[in-house]
Image (tube, rainbow, N blue to C red):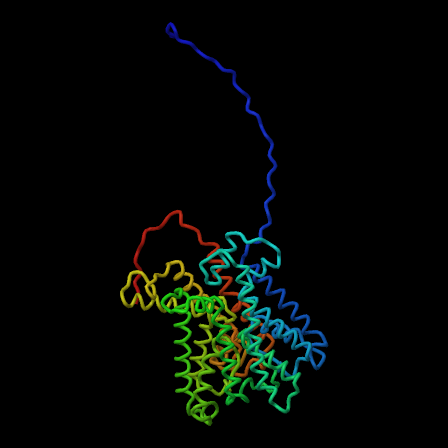
Length: 468
């Protein structure tokens, strides 16, 4: 009942009005995905295969599809495995195709993600910058275009200096003209810096004829090391100049790389010291030089100063381990990368010392990085095992030789015991796929892990698993 004095106000109901808004079209972004990298490298390899099949590319005037595909993949993935003699089989045009593929594959791999976006004229979104910074091992999102330019300038400058030093040696050879010496110098410098290992000496002996030449051996080793350590690490060293102030990534790359070089030199020198087919006949100083060089090249450069097929079984197996590890992330090298190996080694050492949180040099690793590193290693091991099992069915060579060729292909190394030209068509196609997966696999997998990682909405109860 209304009381006296109460007032009731009634307002008319207003009919809601509708305003039609156009839905903005979804912008086709240049989101960087692992498939973009795959498609890009497939396109380069396909074009290289077509060019190498042209009559003008070979001195015989004919190259089979399988040989052209294998050679194009080996050059683009900067592996260095070869079924033909690069110096005598390919014509000058074919050698130009090979060196162009090496340059695109090596330099392009360091900055593939950024280069694709720049070539497409797209802007960098936050997601793309995070993915590129993750792949290059940097912790900043700005200045990526400037970084690409610096990497390009650095690569061209190093290759130019290497070619000049090689020209000093090759031009002194009376059997070579200046034009041939210059071309050999450029090709060898590009191949070495990009950790490829293909050469045009024409003797199918790699650097065996130069194993006593200090200039050729050391310049090649330096080019391989610079190409396999990554521009990011070198830039950090040049800007910081003090080990204590270097980033954790740089410290791990340097310590792991130097440790592997020293250990490799000692092991190869000790195991091959008296081998009459490798280091045995050489003087002590030359033994040390060649042992050091053979410790550098498994960082994914296929040059060799000894006959790999004549090495002892222990040396071959140790070289397989070095090839599987490879070089640094964001470099021209392949393998699981020294960053991954160093992180896992430091994690194991931290656990042995009963540290709750793994880390190194006063810094802790994130659990996500440890999980990604472990994932890369396990998938890489699984791939190698599967390929070796398949090759053991299709080929009639020994297990160690097949394992060596497989890891060499996966790690994009190029070292060979000499069985690659004798593989069947099926074996060559299997190694071709292995080279491609080994080149793009670790980076694509890292991108995929970063891209798909999402915070968990819920967690399950924990339960222990018996270990040991």
